[in-house]
Image (cartoon, rainbow over all chains, first blue to last red; front, top):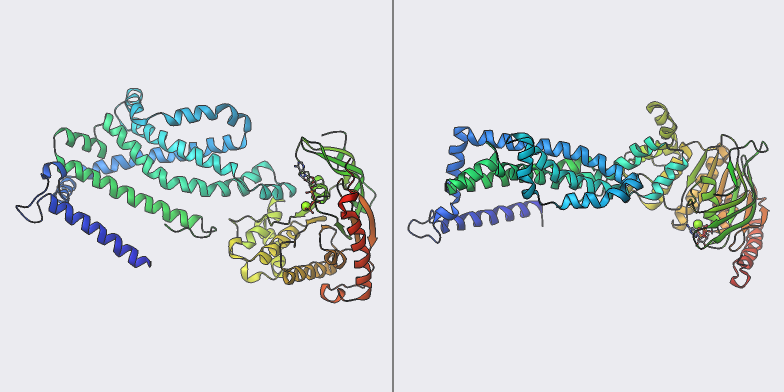
Length: 259
Length: 269
Ligand SMILES: Nc1ncnc2c1ncn2[C@@H]1O[C@H](COP(=O)(O)OP(=O)(O)OP(=O)(O)O)[C@@H](O)[C@H]1O
Ligand SMILES: [Mg+2]
């Protein structure tokens, strides 16, 4: 299929879904409805609510706060994850001793930890950053670690014959070859960071999209719940597309990967 | 590792590599890969090493490069002259896929700590020499096998090694590309005397390139004999092949090699 055909197809599918939703909620043909919009809202109601929310300035502020938390968690998670992944991949004793602990920590369910992070760091931004970090870190860590483990040994040998120092080996071989793994992690990390921040806001917060979601659910404001969800979806798509573009740009030495 | 010295000692002035009664035992099952190898490579000569598959040729190169597994047991002596830079060109090119042709060729000078300008000054003429100027900004995945091996050759030369170790570098290439690259090496050698230890299975390649051809025995490998190749200079891969002198030498080496490859003669130690 050509690129245009794919895009047109996607738009058609989206329109069909939205139309059916609008119809089911009874907002397309008055008098005909399948489900009470109290449960499922409807596209037109969501648009109205988003408009209202943004003109109040409330939603914009919340989006900003959630993005800030997610990006802080993402940045710290990337840096620490890459560092830990390199250390594990290149220093065998550390790998042997600490690997099971990493696996155990990674398996902890984040919603269960969320209340603890609030307990430790309070109701402010820090607890959400920590939660976002805890998701991003392990993803980046495992990708970097795998990246180091799968480095082409022939290349390493060629460099060693040319008397590469350990520092040169890291700069010229290790970093570039784990880069593709780190970037593969970046795309998923963006979504993970967002999820982490939002879960954190569920548990205890005074602002953020997650906070708006929970608050609206408490007040049975279905339209607001849906518009918050739509916002999260749009932000996630925008950010992962950005990450993907960055990846293709930076990894232009690879045979191009579609998707 | 045992008592062996893979050291940088001052050897006789001309011998850059000298193996004396050099043996290697590999792995947990203590396989004797090399037993009593005697071989010298002198400055400015191309020595070709031929031998049956699995006889330990790669093991010998790896010993020189320090690439044997830590479990390997070495004995005898293997000496690389003091301050000799070794270049290694493997069968499978080990190009950096994230670097362009230019970036790959620059890697040797870069590792030696040269400035950006100096690296470029070393790399550019070599890329030109192997005929890839138009491809200097291409990535390895955009090149054919023959072109990649050319880049690998340019990279090895750009490191300015005193001795170049080549392990069947053209084995994966088609006959046309192989001959072209052999010509390239001869051409470069006419300009700047190279010191090369070249491994191959291809006897005509051995005779085209080598000033001396060392024949290795079946495993455990040792040098059975060394044959001087007195063919007219300057050489040309295409022209040499049909000549009587060439065919005579070819036949002689072929017979020796057949004898050595005979499985019934295999003496396990
Ligand atoms: N790491 C290792 N551990 C144990 N045995 C090994 C190891 N590497 C190679 N060998 C064995 O050592 C012997 C010599 O191997 P080597 O690769 O040096 O042969 P070769 O002469 O280069 O063969 P070819 O011409 O096929 O490349 C072989 O029998 C091989 O099975
Ligand atoms: Mg070999």
